[in-house]
Amino acid sequence: KKVIFSGAQPTGVLTLGNYLGAIQNWKSFEDTYNCLYSIVDLHSLTVRNNPKEFKNACLSLLAQYLACGLNPDKNTIFFQSHVPQHSELAWILNCNTYMGELNRMTQFKDKSAQHKDNINAGLFTYPALQAADILLYQTNLVPVGQDQKQHLELARDIAIRFNNNYGETFTIPEIYTPKMGAKIMSLQQPEQKMSKSDENPNGTILILDEEKRLTKKMKKAVTDNEGVIRYRDEQPGVKNLITIYSKLTELSVEEIENKYDGKGYGHLKVDLAEIVTDTFRPIQEAYANYMDDLSYLEKIYTEGALKAQDLAEDTMKKVRKNIGLV
Ligand code: TYM
Image 1 (cartoon, rainbow, N blue to C red):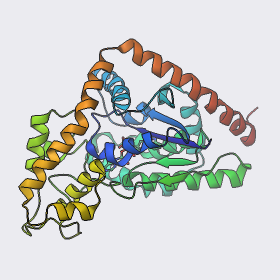
Image 2 (cartoon, protein in one colour; image 1 turned 180 degrees about the vertical axis):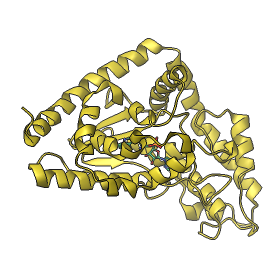
Image 3 (cartoon, rainbow, N blue to C red; image 1 turned 90 degrees about the vertical axis):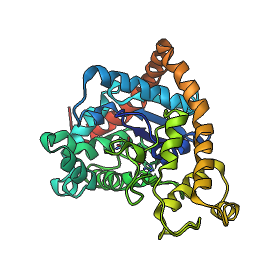
Image 4 (tube, rainbow, N blue to C red; image 1 turned 60 degrees about the vertical axis):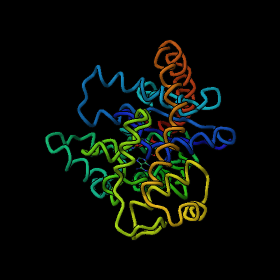
């Protein structure tokens, strides 16, 4: 079976963007690929966290993965920090990645502008750790949202260079982004991506938002003065709502446009709020149950780590040998 790797950071509750851009697709691969889905806790150390809250956020993200339907019998689900080979390979890849390459990363530029008081070395070398995550498992395909493309292109460049310098070591990973929903936009600023760290909470829908809150955010969504429900770049707010609608109902854009022909934005928003609520309700119920059963979570992440460690160690043996470590 071909291998899939992906992950999300435990920096808060998953957004509708995370769900549609990534998690929803992850599930669709579980029967045809050997899938590894990690909670990339080491990546989140690049920002300051309260240790107690952080630990809780890590367990919560595991419960969110499961609640979103990732089946632990079919997928390997684990904490990145439980597989020390990630850190080991990250160091080696750091030594094979140029400052110039890391300097070009837009996420580094954005994050260092946001956290001026904590522009740490880890934030800078973040993409090398991400490359290690992927290359460690001889990954063939990496399903992500649009915003991760630049990091993945760098991971490919690093792998190609490494293979050229030290002989065939890594599989070169392909990038997978969904045709629709690879970049869900903020409900308040539809020219910006929906993000956990948005300073305006109304722009972001979280998978654990309760119905009232969710409906309020949806009703407040920024649209325009055109007054027609059309999927086009001139109407970024409406386009975003149609995208979300289409992804959750599997109705085509055309079917949605026809359905709302001659109707107002309010109508679309109320219906969409209901659709999103209906999607998240079972996830929220499952989430509450998982969070009540920490021993089950422990069983899942322990088994996941053992499986991942085995695979990771196979690659590390090859890496150590190829670079000449005794
Ligand atoms: P993170 O935690 O920011 O996001 C997790 C996944 O959600 C996608 N995503 C979106 N998709 C569509 N619309 C949006 N508004 C939106 N916001 C986020 C992201 O593209 C991502 O797929 N660096 C990564 C985590 C990571 C990783 C990896 C991913 C670490 N190692 C190896 C893949 C492979 C990150 O911060 O994702």
